[in-house]
Image 1 (cartoon, one colour):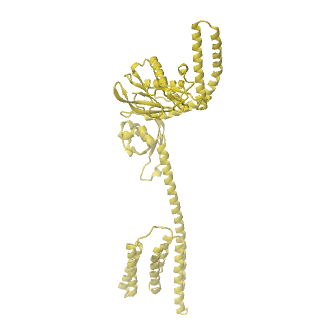
Image 2 (cartoon, one colour; image 1 turned 135 degrees about the horizontal axis):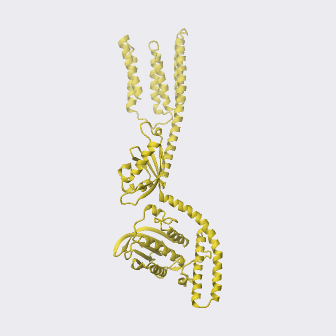
Image 3 (tube, one colour; image 1 turned 45 degrees about the horizontal axis):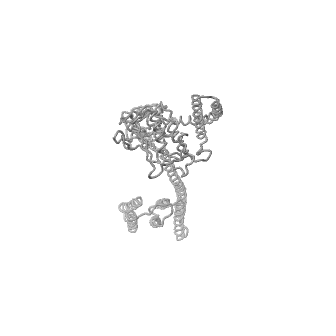
Length: 539
């Protein structure tokens, strides 16, 4: 529309110049050019185009009609003095805005009008002057060629626009998918520029760097924290060499535990970012504890296969030991010899139960083979196990027991409940202080299912430790095997119990302090508890 206004203004100036230089010019031509200027200005100022589409809109029909009528009238009336035929290409090119077929149709209509007018003029002159007819045919042919080329270019442009829109949609979807994948990755990803500014980082990277407590989740610099200097040096090496092999670094952040990371870097090509920007350094961060957890999982898979085979091999000689001990107990006189055979029998039975547990874990068996539902009195067994553990470890006032589930039977094997409680107490004693009440055991069943809680005033666990808390062979200390909590979880799952960890408040030495609490939620045992009265003997 701006071009139409400019073209109308040039036509008016051209006619005025011809009037000044060559003498009087037809007044109606000046009036037509002025009217055309007014029409184009009105359209430019007042027209409100509807949503752009590829269909020929009726709202623009009068625009093409006005242009075609004006240029044809100038061409018909002033063909002798000035050649206005090139202006007829303007409506053809304008028609390309409304589709691939419209320019060719506009060119055909213009050619027909030109040829018809030339035939009319030639017939009036008794066909003595056919120069105008030849010129009209040539002009019409040129307009047809122009219309065809414009149609082809318009079709190609429309096709490329559709492809570009489709590619843009696919690129946006792919970017969203990539963003979701990167956000959910356990490995950290940093995108760093040559000035050590972090352009992008996923949540895992923020957590590994401890940046969540230092900077908000936006652009930040690796130079802003002395502990990150090692990462800035790796970025410099990457920009110089193109890549950096996996390197292990340690980040010592204030008021936080050290982070041991395995870092691998890559440099993006400069051409992918344009000539005005330099390349970026992409850092892949892995927590060494995560890697160790993967190794432990692989070891667990191997040990699971081995444990089943070993358990089968142990069963046969163990059965022979039990049978030989029973025969020996019949022949040996004296209470001392009988006590020795009783010790052998008790330990052989305990080994047999351990073998059964290993086989149950290997076979992922969720219940006893007999189908019976084991039951255990929660308070009595908890008190007995805590007393035995306290005497064995000389806990004294360090351990406090608060039972609130009297006469409550839970669905759990007494031996398994004892093992769960002993493992949790051993784990609590490893990190708790020596103050009175540093370890607390509490039971309750008033407002819901029976619950057993083991609380200690130990230091808070790191998020990386919490994620692998119940995984086998995972421990924050080298002296621990990392099997205690895993065994607790396996035994709880066998009896449909749930074990969970949380950071809670507790009373220690008369003061309220934060501590680590392991909470086990049991299922109530069926009303019929017959057959479980001798649980103390079994324990």
